[in-house]
Image 1 (cartoon, rainbow, N blue to C red):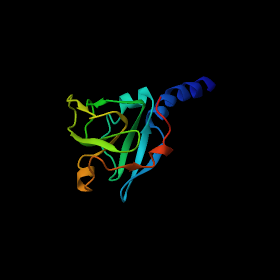
Image 2: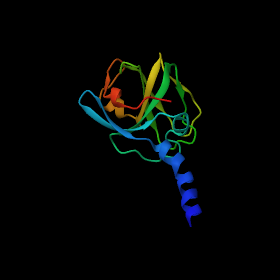
Image 3: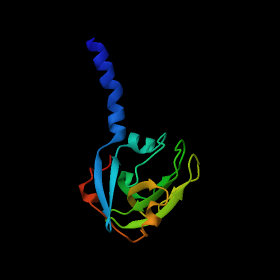
Length: 143
């Protein structure tokens, strides 16, 4: 029976890493509950196979180095919007991404973070490039 418990722990450990911790971010007067993904494995998986996000929920990607990053929507069935964010919290650019596509969406500068939300979330709240994302300093650093 002990070996079964050990196997369970070994199987569940990567899932816990992929899901990450949560953080509350703020853009203007809007609060966001974001799942943190800050490892290579969790960033690669992202929101693949996810079919729903709550209204003010998203995923915060944290990279080890601020540089130009690209995203695609392979195996991601829900439409998303992404904000590429500089190390100082300034939104560099926004992009709408269509489900299950291989089209690349790139940051227009050196991004340390990327925030994925339901498609239209940023535009519905008049959030635009140059706006700042607060509370990023509380997020664990990328690996």
